[in-house]
Length: 125
Image (cartoon, rainbow, N blue to C red; front, side, top):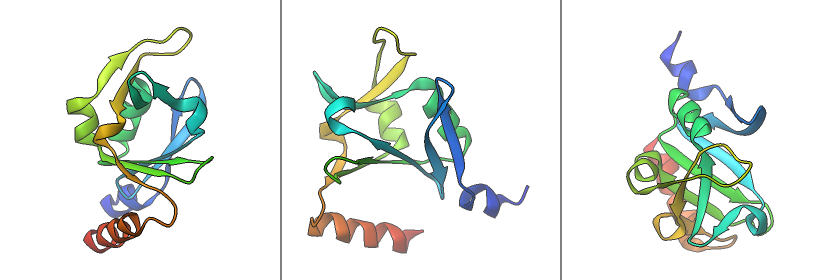
């Protein structure tokens, strides 16, 4: 397999038998509905352990989550999730790992700092 194709080709990530996001260029992309998917106590974003393992196998080094209700973008390093994340088991869901919101880089639509961060990240690739 051409290593370049491994990182540029989009690979779907599954959890519970359905696509929950995709990995492309070393980033695990996932869309959420914030009012339903952001944890309330403590405030954070959770992933199934299986989806994180699959994303790592697909070459994900970063996480990028978009809240489709607000357009807010949450970004963090995969290593940070693995180091600072906590495990949880909610009824009816497979085992999960969550990262509290204070560990995410958060940018809202029109946020100049978020736009500058995006430009910096693109230049680094």
